[in-house]
Length: 569
Image 1 (tube, helix red, strand yellow):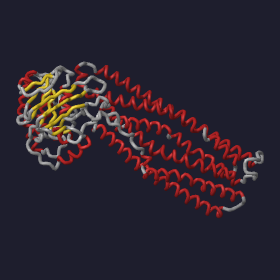
Image 2 (tube, rainbow, N blue to C red):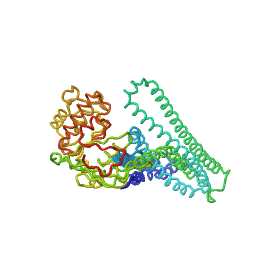
Image 3 (cartoon, rainbow, N blue to C red):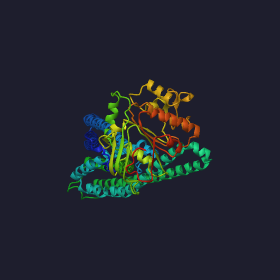
Image 4 (cartoon, one colour):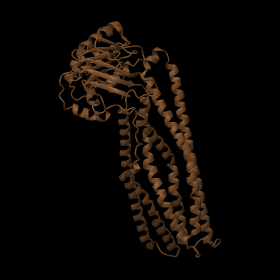
């Protein structure tokens, strides 16, 4: 089974037919300025020839009609492009979130949750301006300047030559500045993501920081991190202003040179450049009106060049969430199992056997924790995994739960091989009680049901009572809990995890990780009693350092020594 799954980079919204049509209409609408400029130059020539205001009615109406068509086309294309880009960004986020959900909890390359949340919620927004503004600006640059250059060249090859020679200076400086802008944007996203992860980590451990009297030092670190964010943001803004200034300079010089040439040509000071025929007022004004429009797409492209740099950096951050991942076995079938669970009527738990043969597993870049080892657990047996820290107790539980692919060997649950096809179904028949159960902000009922449609209010109430939380005033099903279980003690958190397992009647295999860690002896004994009551008629595997708990189970397996062919004691 592969230890990693490489994902392709998210597709750009510019590849969507809807987005392409919107960008094309927006870009093509800019070409309507050419006939508008021709109408305006024609009207000025007629006025110079002595025509009255009545003669301006037809050119004015045509100019107005073209303006309405141009504005309407740009508005329609912008709405279409924005909608397509927003949908594509939502799909990118969904793909990244699905990739995170499909990664093994033991994947050590996973980003911290705060940084991943920052990428999905904040940094990914930088993709939208890139798609909405940069993509049509790039297409407009490909269409409008060549068309204007050809029209100007028809009247004056000299004016067209000035425009063509001035144009490359803009993209050259854009590229030079753009390289720096992209690097600055990537650095800023890293700083912002790091700050988000740092804040989330410190908020989670706020009670510990208070106990250690480390609040002031943490506040200083937050200020230092915020200062780094400010400095990186100012670097990005300086580069953005520099690119805009360079663009304005070169476009203004280009327009000025064209204006100087046309003016001296009309005065008779410069003869060549118009195919041997002197330009008329209408033709000269027409060329002058087109000169700023020639540079306008280039100026717009430079203005949104920073959006491109930020968008590419954000896209790269999204793609990093999806590559080099240790896959969660059966993740592709997880949604199918969840949708089916709402229609399934579960039978009482049936205790399965657990057979492990030829197991080989090690974290990437580390020596194997298990090397060609076997372990057999009978149906309904209660087993304690004991051993020093780092001996692989939690890892072995994770392997049995199908949370990480193994390098070699076979794992069978109730005789069914645990693999990519069966992992999701087998996990649906297990219950996991972790060392630090996570509690979401919400009601006790929601925290026990965990979104399982087959867990009713009655089931939750019964589970809370059986777990020993019935006497806890703030742990009734309708009570609200804070993020991380604010208001619950360590023992009550473990009992909440027990209630989650009790509410899963189909769970014939209980996997428990250090249920009595950090509890006083009386609370630990009460948790052990509740756990053993829950485990009646089920297979129970407990990873623990608690010798009192291990002594009350039917069998002890010591890790750190070979597992080979262990059978029931």
